[in-house]
Length: 549
Image (cartoon, rainbow, N blue to C red; front, side, top):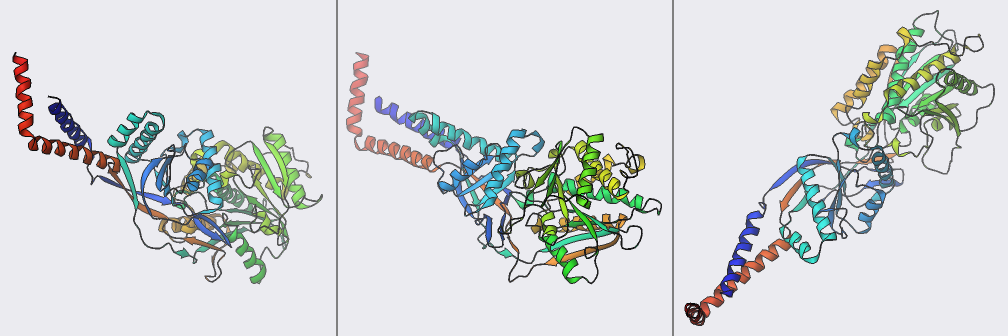
């Protein structure tokens, strides 16, 4: 009787396990975007690997060796990333939420700082980012529950979890070697509003337009630096109206430029300056430049910092502009904090912190306006820098502050006795909310990573649209395309930045072993029963007789 019960239990166990198993061929294909990979001079950044063949595991697992670590944005931290590296994880897959505005501010800040840490050095571990969907979230929850069972349950529950749980195999099977791309073109746009009179001094207003983040295909750069590009284009539109009439045209040339390669040591700015100073026969940069205003990350905050390479001397145009800036803020935007940040250029370092330093190295006076005090702020390069990170009221306010300061400086309104709170930009000259919104939406409609801007059709169209905006409002518009020396490029990018990934839903190897053990035990019992049928029959018959007696 006991033998029969054991046989029945084994059969039922095998049937239950077999019936709950997921089909071995069940799979799901999705697109993931590989972490940045580039060489800036002699420094290597990002991940060197692309191929993944590994089982998915949660970051909460104690053992991550040769596993693909699945994380949500809230799970990703510098500590966990370094732990995955230390344990020789096979890969890291980060799930990016569709609605980033729903992510808590503290989580965004933590992720951005961890993102910055990950990008500082190179790693051999493939790192991918994929937008969340139903299938990926299901996988995440499954591996999360499996990790909880393995780390907090007693042995029997752990064994049951191993046997009955679903495992996920992650596969990136592109065997093509990763290749360097050294023929990227960097485009810089320039345009001018000519001032009144001959030999008028020039004010340059510039911003870089490319974006940066953990994965190039997911880098939309709303605040850094879409906000600055938006303000620059609105300044071009508004000042064009003032320059269009001889009665309101100031005695300054107003030059605008949008540069590429800003996230890579401001290479577009460097090449543009060299083009104007070293190769062009005539250029406004050759002549009397009052100063260069570099716009960088201006989409939020109640702080506005003026970054300079050296403290401005009294009675210089830069000093006068800063005084006018403080006057505009104190009279109309008193809650905004204005700070002057002085940082010397370290010639030993291979990279520079702010765009104005490129001009300072060529003895052209300039400064950067930004709501960031620290040039190493993680906000300057993050895939979470989307439209949700921009406060449009503060974007408009910062634009107005810059516009009013420029007007006060160029028209010398202070010396003419104009009231401190005089408003030049109002009515027809006001910043348009709808235009700010549409410009930001346009700039963040496609990723603006430098390595994509001359390769992908949508990015090429975006640069063409920026050039069209320049031609609408400015004169002498020029498009400069700078190509790198393939033998000695300033920056080298790499291909395979977006990959198809296949997720297989399978039972873990432990399940196969357990199922095999159950089948072996069942067959062994059947074999034993057949071989000893006579003995078992006599025992069974005796047992029946004893029950009837």
